[in-house]
Image (cartoon, rainbow, N blue to C red):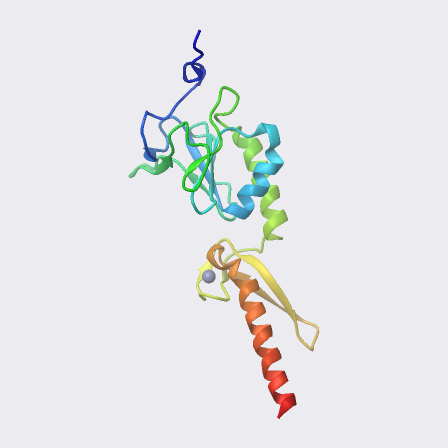
Length: 200
Ligand SMILES: [Zn+2]
């Protein structure tokens, strides 16, 4: 007897040979998390995770029950759901695509893994947020790099001045990981300048 896993699955993407854009809010809503936060949350969830899609940038997408997530206000996390005036689409890979590169099922769809409990997912993402991005600053801050205000500021540095009062450096989601690189480049430039000063 041939076993047919698809028959036992609660849901399967429509048969397609490639990634297909499917509307959120019909079978599921989706929770998107940036790679750093997403990876940590996936680890924290352990066996409690449902199916997870990963795109080519490493961004993770969980599927949750439609309408089960409100505004979570977590940094680098978005809820993809049907909006009143427009549809939101998620790139869903064929069920058989369980390896990259490109969009694939990081945690494959199976009878045990489909929807993730929104409450547990929120808890894991909140913990991952604190662990990976540090304390949550109050309110909007200006990104040190693009100089635009951001609602999801991450403290990337606290510079201690001579007076003892520290200057806090904030970054927007796009530039959170740019800071370290910039800081290293700056330090190298300062060292070079010092070295040149000495040899003169
Ligand atoms: Zn920025």
